[in-house]
Length: 126
Image 1 (cartoon, helix red, strand yellow):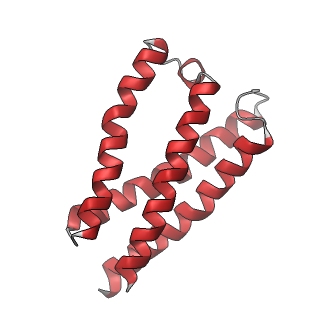
Image 2 (cartoon, rainbow, N blue to C red):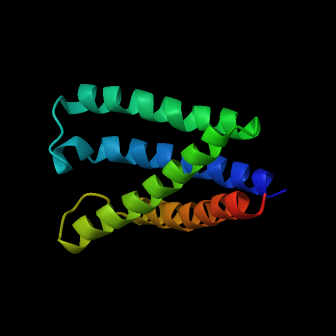
């Protein structure tokens, strides 16, 4: 039962993270983090990230331990994204300063915390 809960939190969170990265392309996040390669480099970086994130769902559905490890990584990524962008917003940066961007970051934080809690609960009680 807990594994199914982890799976659904994971699915929702990976979709939120992908939406956030779409928003990140709009805001030219590579400039915010001083990443080389412009949009091409940004897209290239995201191919393996999205592949690993989505593959984690497959592993999780199969009950593989690596699915739980990737669940922890995805939830940590959502928490980190919220924290780093909140930091930049408080420093006065204009990126992600729209209602849609902020709602997306807030939802990612909530789902990431729930996913992390469910993942830990599975590790402890399964």
